[in-house]
Image 1 (spheres, rainbow, N blue to C red):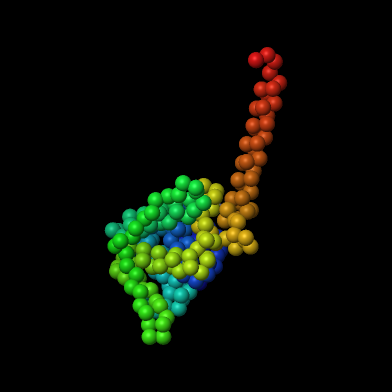
Image 2 (cartoon, helix red, strand yellow):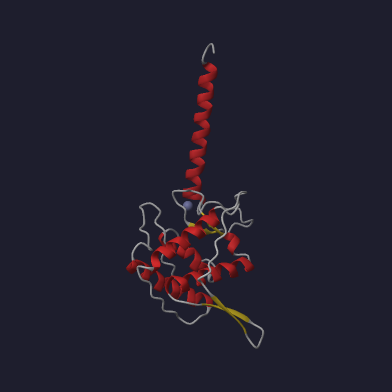
Length: 206
Ligand SMILES: [Zn+2]
């Protein structure tokens, strides 16, 4: 299994088709040294999609798919990526974000003679990919893995990671690195606040 976008940031093995959602999120520019946005140019996007969809087909037991992306697909895909990122990052915000309706993206649902149900994405280009990604997210929500797909709380990182902690309490893609940096910043801030307080109380008069 090869997830070209996610593997730029960390090795991973998200279960089943959810890997495609994670990989789309991780096409964004990030990390140090800064990796490029894989959805900025059609050639990069095509290369990414071809490899990621090969992994998706293998991971979900489907026939191989061939998707063609052009320049026109890119803004739609970048917007989808941002909508997903914002929703995942704001999952526990009390205020809650906006609801997005994808009216031009279709999933063809079939009820088979043996009572199994399947959902196949319809359309081409960004529409097909959007249907596929949202279909996988919906399935993952039903199986409980969606709740484990998260955006790293370190804003400089912002990577999409799969939380394997027992009680699903992870907030950083790695405690070493992003978690350490955040803890260090917080303790420095606390120390500075303490120092300021001491300076103020040490000032005579007032
Ligand atoms: Zn991180």
